[in-house]
Image (cartoon, rainbow, N blue to C red; front, side):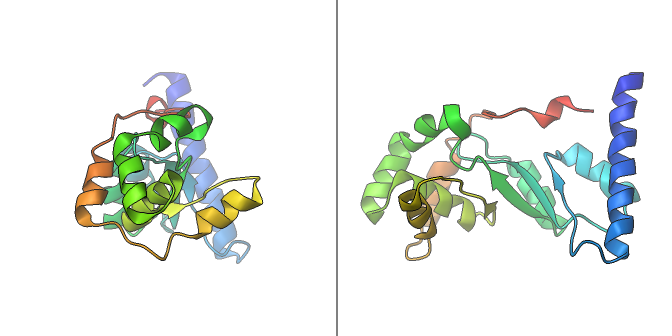
Amino acid sequence: LSVSDLKHVELRKESWLEMEQMYKEGKFGSIGVSNYTVRHLKDLLSYCSVKPVVNQVEFHPHLVQEELLNFCKDNGIVLQAYSSLGAADGVGAILNEPVIVAIAKQHHKTPAQVTLRWALQLGIGILPKSSSAERIQENAQLFDFELSAEEVSAISKLDKGKHYCWDPCNIP
């Protein structure tokens, strides 16, 4: 690792230890991280005295981070998705996937609802974002249907390892 690479590692550790201290002082109810890979989490778990409650990452059918999801589950860390529908330049690509469209028709739901339900059934916390009242209501209608194991698997197979946001794997 270069000197600048080591600085990232040092700053992450310093930041986490400060958050732990504030947590222990009762200033926070819980603490978590964002955009941590398995490598980043392993490093954090090697020195932390308070485990992160959540790891917020980009997660959608084109970026099914199965290794990260399993690592988080195994370590009691909630994986929370941002850009659940693929971010601005990926929304159309995901919501127009024939598999998702077909499943949506079967359930009389929108492709967005199916995509969000898929994430929930994988145990992912979701943060659907919208400025439209209609879409916000639509996003809340996820609990009156369930996807079959085959449907969940079919959506998961759409994985392309595609980041529509930035890729934290490039950060040491």
